[in-house]
Every structure is written in structure tokens, then in C-alpha cells.
Length: 156
View 1 (cartoon, rainbow, N blue to C red):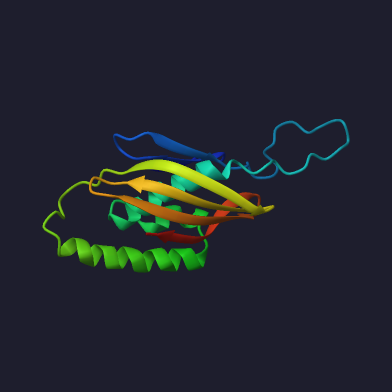
View 2: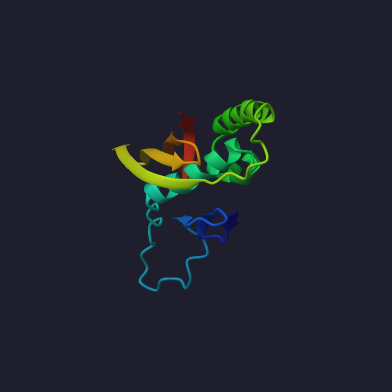
């Protein structure tokens, strides 16, 4: 489940730990105006590891059929959304031919490694564990409008 309360993207898988990625509040909701005369700068970006962890869990859920791509559309670019729609369609066809199609997916997120090649860009690799295997999710996050957005996602 993804809950958006204006300050966080919270991802919870039933029976699993939750991952939370904090996002900045919209401008104008910072609380009382500062009387000092200086205008505060934009809030710092949240930790990209938390965002990558939450998105990797969401991608795994999308590819197992437990989540719709539209549920994370706000956190990904249009190109990534099209890519995930294609991958979800391929995965759905593969599931329909499998004798285990009624199994509920059991997904947990493992290690997260983040590199920062330059300001406003983070590249992460996340290990996602299912019942039968561990898979790697590679995510490129870029700062857009004061928050992280995935501009590329690949799952091996």
C-alpha cells in the first residue's frame, strides 16, 4: 500500500516491514513565515536510499501482479511508466502459463547501494528477495521539482 500524506511515500507489503521515503512539502506549507527577512531555501532532498528501497519493492510488486503501475506514476517518468507497463504485461503472460499462479507473492527488500555521480542524481541497486530467488533492481533517481523521480528502472 502506498500512502501519500504530503510529506512521505510509505510502502507497506502485508506481513513485511514498511519503507518510507520522505518528500518535501509543497511550497507555502512550511509553517509560520520567517520574520528574519531571509527567504529559506528549498528543503534538502530526502535520502535516495529510502526512495530507491520503496520503489524497488513497488516494482517487484508490479511484476508479480500485486500492484498497478499507476500507483507509483507520481514517482516515475513517463518513459519508465511505459517500460513498466510492458514488463508487467510480459510477466502476466508468464504467470498465466505457470502452475503456481495462485500463490501470493512474498517480497522483501535486501541491501541497497547508492552512488551519487553528481548533484541531483542518485543511482541505486537494490536486492529484492522473493520465495524462489533474489533479483536486482537498478534505479536512476533524478531531482525534479524538489523530489526524487525515477528516470530509469531495470530489474534483472
